[in-house]
Every structure is written in structure tokens, then in C-alpha cells.
Length: 148
Image 1 (cartoon, rainbow, N blue to C red):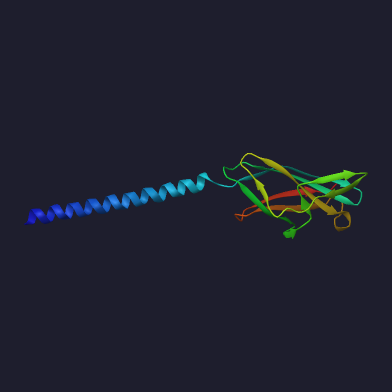
Image 2: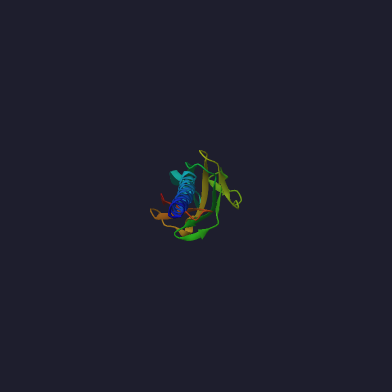
């Protein structure tokens, strides 16, 4: 009778150990997948040019992560800014930009240029402007533009 209860006890302990180890393996693999699929933007270059009564900021952004990244807003000096686009045209020292996109989708290894129109009357020459690119996952990517 004692031999049967020891055998049952050993089987129960082995079952618990196997169950816990499978659970830990699944948990660890999920953590590895989360770190494998991250959104990572690089601000390759940012600069400003003056055209007539406006400054035009250029921010070249590259997705160096392994998943598609959605840029949903741009901040200037910690305030949401609406005057940016993926298109800009310059004609006779006058600059204009296209409509503000709802979101900017960047596939892995792709890059784009974000154009920011800054009215000259709001900023002094030589000022530093803090820019943050905000993604839909809540991560901010900062850069600084120095006005000419």
C-alpha cells in the first residue's frame, strides 16, 4: 500500500513540474517575440531653410524596426502641431505644403521626409525648435531644428 502511494505521489510531482515548465517556456517565448517585433524610428537628418515669410523644416525619418510604424502626430516645443505634410512645393521663394495626413505609415526599412511649415513671425532667427515625432504605440522620437 505504501509503494502505491509513493508511486502516485511521484507521478503527481512529475506532472506538476512538466506543467510549470511548459508554462514558463510559453511565457519566455512570448517575451522574446515582443522584443523581436519593435517599432524603431531613426531621425536620419533634420534641417530648416527659409523661404520668404516661412521656414520649412525637413525631417527625414527611417523605420529601422521589424514592424510597420504609424506616426500619428508631430509636436513642436511639446505642443501638438498641425502644419506638416509629406509634400512640399517651392515656387518663387514661396513655399507651400500639402494636406496633413491622418497617419504616416512606414514599412520596415523605408524612409520618408516630413515637411514642417513654420511662419517666420512666430520664431526668431537662431532659435532652437524642439520637435517630437509621436507613434501610435506611444513612443516619442525627438530632434532639434536650429533656425537660420
